[in-house]
Length: 299
Image 1 (cartoon, rainbow, N blue to C red):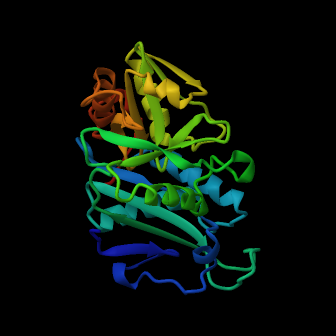
Image 2 (image 1 turned 30 degrees about the horizontal axis):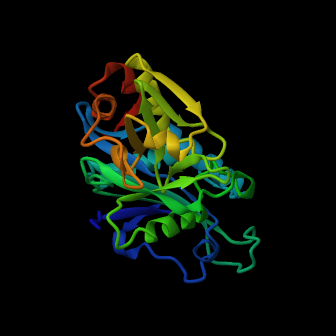
């Protein structure tokens, strides 16, 4: 991966290659950390971070679920993120804030371990660099909401996604699709799912999925285009019969889906998906005056 010059660690900017932790860091062993994925874009107004405040708000929410005390305020984190981007002169890329329990205790109870916070950023292009992708229903289900806090962005949750991704190695599939314990479509390994049928957009309802910030933005954009959006339970059979499907996410942005389980949904990019993708890119690059409020310009 590409690197930048510095990483913010516990309030200080340090050289990228000096950002290190102890081998007995609690979160390394047990997964009890919280993180965010945020993008910065070359907007017409200058380098701009997309929906920074909402990402930081969710970051703090995720930390609370782990009873992880953060000594920085949300405003201080916002300023620190802006400064990391500014110092590294990043105009187009990815930002990763993370909070984790450090070295100090190896019991499962992390309370006596110190809380550490870091912010890194780096250049990063398309997460799924294809015009449209082929996906497969995973043999693993999405973590049951009664087993965790499903709308928090916790490090340990992503072992579920790692297993599903590893399961695709050596196949022609680009990404996996999780079902929930009831056989309903949940989400991708790091994306929210949408499908279109008869010009109506459907997406899994909240409660057992991550409430994606890109998901929320896309729903707003679709409604602004005069399209109906229905949040409901969806079965794989519903998706097989769809006219178009796509993923959304900070990393994935708006990614069209060509096929699910080898059932072709749409060759290339569907008409409505293309409209939504174009509208989304206009927002993040500062070309939609109605959504400039979602951009934090780093000067």
